[in-house]
Length: 295
Image (cartoon, rainbow, N blue to C red):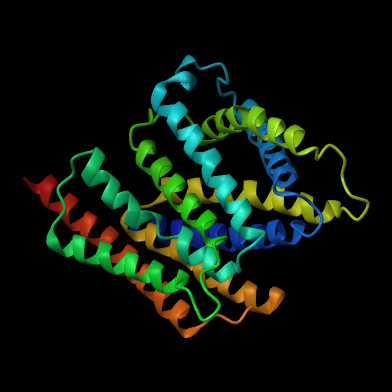
């Protein structure tokens, strides 16, 4: 009964997190009308650093932990930064519905990575679902009569980077808190984003800058991240993780309402395949885990 209550609470927090992330993505896309991608990245990284560092300090966490320089964490920082770069680039150029469908396919790619790098054994059922998931991604990004929009490649970059991040996270010391980990990531990304802004000559903000939109994308992105981590720590992953795919639905709705996007039938079918494949993979992982625990 207690586990069921925790799972319900975790599911609600996951849904809230995905909804907030979708709204934050919408504000990032809107900011692309008056900011360069480099400036957007700088705002997200510097704003995230301030928020997460304050949370870590208020909780009395050690931000001078020497383990922050462990190779596995350095890989995670780089993957997070490249993933965020891909998200910003594709959000400013690609419809929200496509961004959501492609980037949310990360559990499928993580399953492949676990086989290659962590030597995990995968049954034919999971391989079948992995293939179906990739077919779904291809349906989403398939070229139409006008040809493939190569800006979608940035969504694929984000997908690969976030998959590497999720894979490496399995090797991250569990006693390093989420706020500290996020702070370390922001610190690692700040030099890159600052150099990018300087290299592009984006030192001055345009007169039409909308500080309200900037504040919303920073605050909502940080809140969404914290809710996501909290949801995963409350209940069982097998019960909560499938609801991360709600982000695809939220982005689809926001794309229609805010940007008047009209998703094609192939995009809708592809999104459904990505969701079904990811949910099945997580369900099979739970089954395998239960069998191993009984042995």
